Image (cartoon, rainbow, N blue to C red):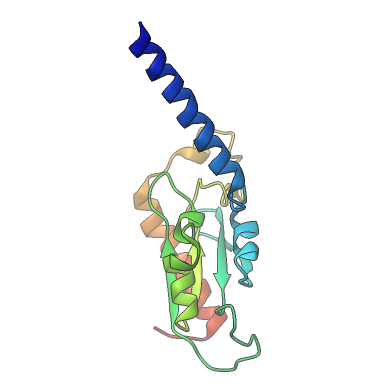
Length: 162
């Protein structure tokens, strides 16, 4: 019975230490936009409507932390898409070591795409995200509609052709 007490006490100790660590991390609980702000980057939110009516939000990080916003140079574009069951915050979650922020620091114009049905892209021109019809899509539609809509939008916005 004493070994069981030791295990229970150890588990309670670990749970307590872990919960305190989470509370001490200032990034805990921040949404995508708050997280970007907290890490010192400027951003723009862009709304893009696909050919089949889904309304997507794509976040642009146009420059690195110390880069001038009035720079007239044409920059290479990086369009980043999160994985399945994920969201764009995962592309920057490691702070300065994240792909989204690293690319911005290397001079890229970074776009963080939120695919349809994502926390940041729940809109549609005709359907409610509460309806079954709204959710009748797969990753095929993300590739067929969402990515091309983002690419066209970014080309029009930046003037880049490829």
